[in-house]
Image 1 (cartoon, rainbow, N blue to C red):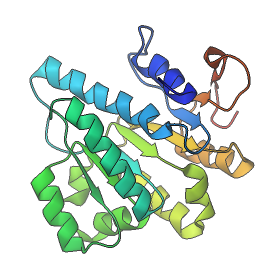
Image 2 (cartoon, rainbow, N blue to C red; image 1 turned 120 degrees about the vertical axis):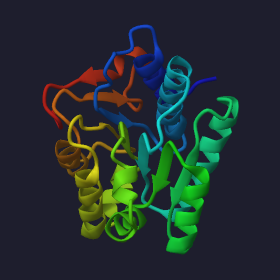
Image 3 (cartoon, rainbow, N blue to C red; image 1 turned 120 degrees about the horizontal axis):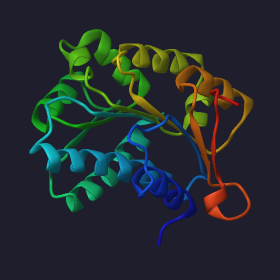
Length: 224
């Protein structure tokens, strides 16, 4: 059975009325309500459909997910591999995070050749600055996910600067579709959304009272 946030996100991104071009999303849901699957299943399904339509996927990272801690990155990796097992192996996932050497990361990436890459801000920024060809590997990113956005902000200014740097290294034309996930809609999160998301973003608020179909909202300006 789907949780509220999963129902909202799946209907918006995978339903019959799904947009041809995804909007940027501000996704709010309480911790432990299945927020990870709410965005991970649609982005993987997007890649699977392309694989089926085009007979394969081009090399390079198509989806980049940033999470605040090593533990969360490893947790996301486990969830992603579970989803991918059901997708028939058409899409590959990998990660970079603290607790592993940079050489371990590079060897893992070469072996996995991921379409979905998970990482912490610090480790991703380090690779972008130090690892040859890492920037090139992200030149085809289509979806940029910032998971646990409130925790990213709570981690301090350095994390925010690293996220900004990562964002600057992503393609500029077209820009990736960005999904910002958070358990709160605090003023700092709204200001962060203004920086990270494009005008015309949509909000999916699974914490709102009332029927789930009423929880989605569209905004002409980020943070509105």
